[in-house]
Amino acid sequence: MKNFFITLGVAVAACALAFGVFFVLNDDPALRRAARENDAMAWLRVEFRLSDAQYAAIKKLHDDYGAVCGEHCAAIMEARERKAPAAEVERLEKVCVDAMTGHFKRVAALMPAEQGDRYLATVLPRVSGYAHTGAPNLRANP
Image 1 (tube, rainbow, N blue to C red):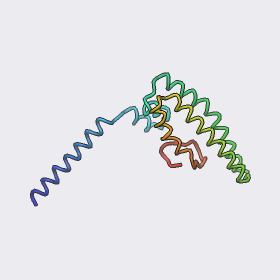
Image 2 (tube, one colour):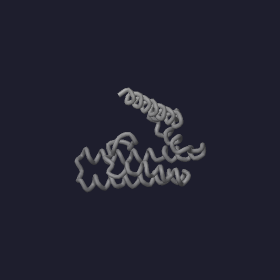
Image 3 (cartoon, rainbow, N blue to C red):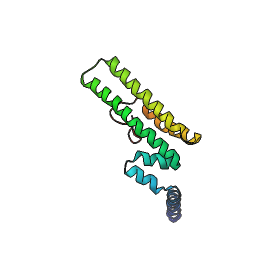
Image 4 (cartoon, rainbow, N blue to C red):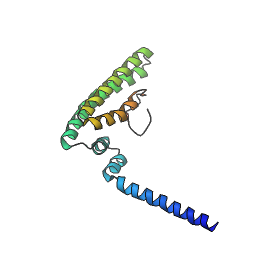
């Protein structure tokens, strides 16, 4: 029994050490700060290792798309409030999803190919089946 406790203690210590080393080697304070502050653009910059030029171009795309996104949201909410036919709401939602998908693909095109593919793999699943109750995010499921 004595050997069991010694072995258990060594195993727990080894696991704790492995976790600590992994955490220290993979910790990115900028990424944690962006997540804590809900700053999607800072998260994007850090997570996909964007250069200043890439970040500036993507930020401009994002800012320009904000007005389009707002128009789509307003149209969908207005249709829902007036209890528009389901076909009309579905059409408006499809326009929104198609626009978001195109926007995300334009953003990905400004990244290195590997990062762009990873970005699309992260964001596109959030668009399919999207509930249109606010801007999509990475924390909550669609």
